[in-house]
Length: 410
Image 1 (cartoon, one colour):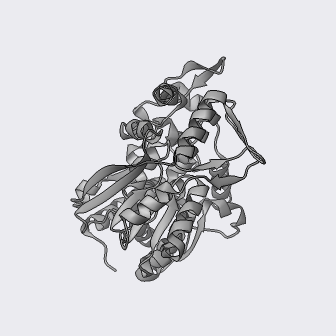
Image 2 (cartoon, one colour):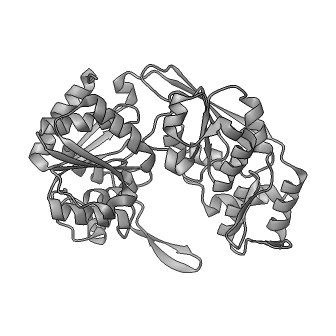
Image 3 (tube, rainbow, N blue to C red):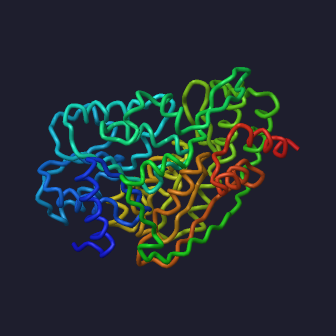
């Protein structure tokens, strides 16, 4: 395995930055080779042991890269959910998809666990993400606060950081006056600049053209009837189960499920109500190796019932066979490659703009010239409104839903 020229340049820069600050942020866009680049930097720093924290589905590919590269250091690759099991001492910790630690105003459990681990090891730290601050510059603070060497270390907490870097304003939610900390200033990126290496797909020579197509499915009459009844009465009682939408948020979630053919009952059980989307996908893309993204767990059940043994959820099996793969959007949107898929097909759509922009890039490689992405929406459903919102890099919220509901009910 050989590094690309731009990776060699980034490795040299990264070694210099890590040597000076003990902290580096690789803000490299997806498919530009963050993993291999971070390993090259680790090699350049002459470290002996590396802990690589990532998403569960990415572990296999990272271990494979390590085996191919054969660097001189030892590595342990685990998912963030296994942080509590870490016992070793490491010279370097790599934090893959670091934006997942960017919650605010309070630090997430994940970022607190990483900070505690760092305090015990005092390692060098590499953070990596193609989208360091996908929704707000405020998301940077709790990513880098895990390192005592971060440029905001003089602020004892996020609130004091806000005094200098965030325009805080108030808004009313459910009758309560709440502080909104989402308006982080661009000064955050300026302060991070000495610690950061940014690199885009365009700079790397990617020429892929992504084409998106929306295909509509007529769902069963019972599906539309159920959605209409729930919108009107906010509750539907069956013989054994109840669908309850007694708050606007629950109504939004339930309709999102129902229009794609599933529902989660008040008891916690979920059921497939309508296989129309799964049958449409199987028919439309017959004998084609595709990657399928779904949102709700019951949607996977619908796909499996239609595809049978022709569908897998395992990335290694997908790469080694002719089977198509189904992945949940949030868990599959980062850290994996679906380059062997001919098309990317969405059974449903997530409310998150981050999910939209990250997941649809899973097929991209430097050699690939075209990506075909298909969105499978129910006719007269909720998905169109969500799609239009995330296209504009905004999350789909309750305010958007309230406006769309008027159309759905008309």
